[in-house]
Amino acid sequence: MTKVVLIPGDGIGPEITAGVTRVLEKAGAGIEWVEAAGGLGAYEEFGDPLPEETIDKIKEHRIALKGPLTTPVGGGFRSVNVRLRQIFKLYSNIRPAKTIPGLFNKCGDVDLVLFRENTQGLYSGLEQWGDEAQSRAESVAVVTREASEKIVRAAFDYAVHHDRDKVTLVHKANILKLSSGLFLKVGEDVAKDYPKVGFENIIVDNMAMQMVMNPQRFGVVVTTNLFGDILSDLASGLVGGLGLTGSANIGENYAIFEAVHGSAPDIAGQNKANPTALLFSALMLLDYLGKPDLAEHIRGAILAALADENTRTGDVGGKGSTTTFTEAICAHLD
Ligand code: ATP
Image (cartoon, rainbow, N blue to C red; front, side, top):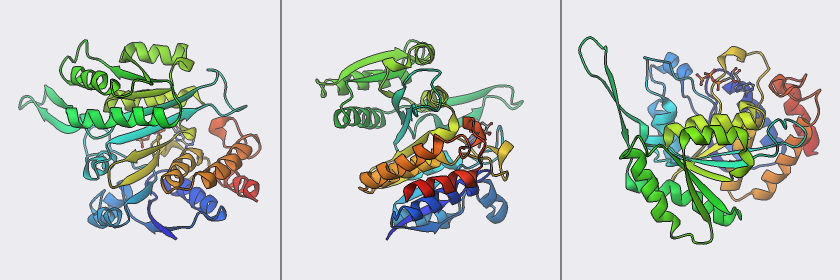
């Protein structure tokens, strides 16, 4: 048995993590879950949204599957997601968005993998008021050569290993000449080490339009933190919504897997949440553990359950619930 930390999280988190652990157990994944607290629930219970005990458990077991954690808007505590990425140096946030045949095809066949720098940029936590009246706010975006190089190399390495012919780097170096300019310069330098993989760069606003108009143009995309956050939600929209896209946060020594979506408080506790995004994240976890065949087997069962309107959840046009969908996947695993 491999021990993996499980943070059920807030909102729909407990419902979808229950679905995922049920499916993985049914599939014989050989995982022993070590439960840990995090998010708004942990803040209310322990006075800390990221208790020391949770950090210690991740340090010990090195791998975690995390449900969504609510981050208060405006004031309140700092994002636990961002803190985890910074504490464990999870520099690479990998967010695939792939069309599921027969489910949602408004945008044609999309097969994008977005690499988002995960520890810096405007998420560096360097914010302050510019005056006492709090009428001026300042945020500092930190971009280093080292972190940029790591994420760009991760994107190129992925392209090499998955036979992708091109990496697209997204930036805003025409305006943010230093922070985005450095990221672009590093990308151009790293690209020279991968002569067999094509390289292009594109300004983020144009990218947003191109992804909608012609998403087939893109395969592997790499960008800075905030642009990656926004464009990965856009990519989710191209393939049928946030209920369908998983992600991996990978560093040298630790890895945390989570859905792209948030805690969806509007549907929490109603058995309506789609666990597919967290399931796809769990499949990335199985890949990471060296079990790609098992991941493929489970993927087949998920796709079969998604194909049935009666079992899939409402966000993807179905009549089912979190539990009917989970049970349908388990039935397909047999
Ligand atoms: P947070 O503050 O935690 O980011 P949010 O509501 O701002 O939460 P999301 O949780 O990402 O953002 O939700 C955006 C929309 O997508 C909501 O309407 C939500 O119900 C829907 N949604 C997100 N995840 C799922 C899911 N797994 N299944 C069904 N609908 C979902």
